[in-house]
Length: 105
Image 1 (cartoon, rainbow, N blue to C red):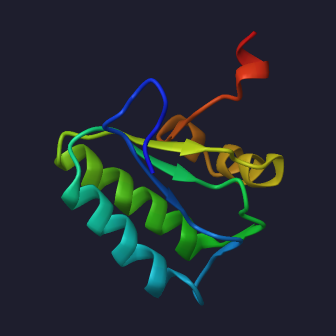
Image 2: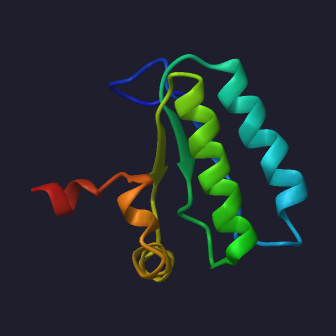
Image 3: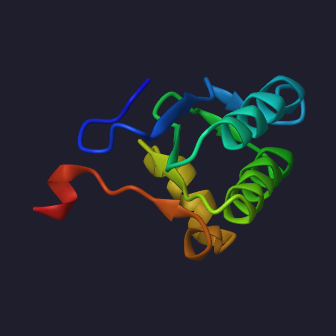
């Protein structure tokens, strides 16, 4: 999927859970996306309902991999509940979170 305004960006959706039970399927997809692209990698979290420490670790690891590849990882559609987890863990200071257009205006 391509992003309007940034035709080279890639979008990867993670589903409704990012935890110890799902990271085995998500991590390879995210790493493949980092390794196969050249511009921003957008991870769509709009359907995410639950994340645990393992899921947070996958996001941080993917961020590091993207930085190492000269790319930027952007989290899109972060639900308020997940945003609170990012804030409590202070990962919102490390990971780039895309703000909704209504929040920008």
